[in-house]
Length: 182
Image 1 (cartoon, helix red, strand yellow):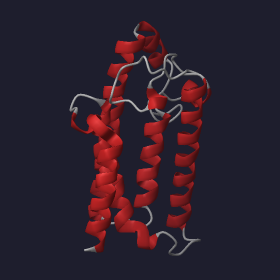
Image 2: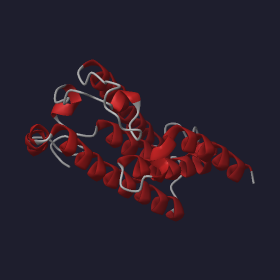
Image 3: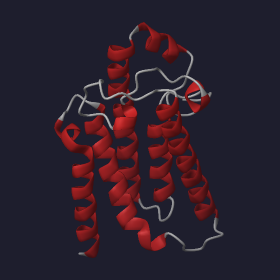
Image 4: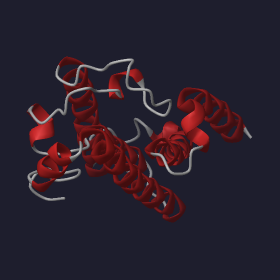
């Protein structure tokens, strides 16, 4: 019962955070919200295992993935704010303020991957999953990853619409989530 209450509370916060994009089925925000829901379920289910066997292989791998996740989100947001020059004139309610970039960011981590923030969420998903992996949670983690892939697909459509040919050229030279791999 405690897990359901915690999950319900987190879900309400996620709905409030996501705003109108929660219900825009053709926006990246919709799929990002679904991924966040999966991550919340993983977190609620694995919280009590967070520090079990701290030097075990699974825990070390988990902390490495979580560390990568933190690096990617910090590096990504800093570059979006610094180089992307978010502007209120970009009238899209499904975007967070830092996502309303007026310049295409293609340096730093964005030189290698187009979606460091979504990549961060993928690493977060699997880092939390490894705290106490189960068959059911592996399905939830896989769903989160699929939803993040869909998030990136819809985000790219939005970027092509906003940045046009410049984004198409940028896309040819970068990977989606993992440098040099994927």
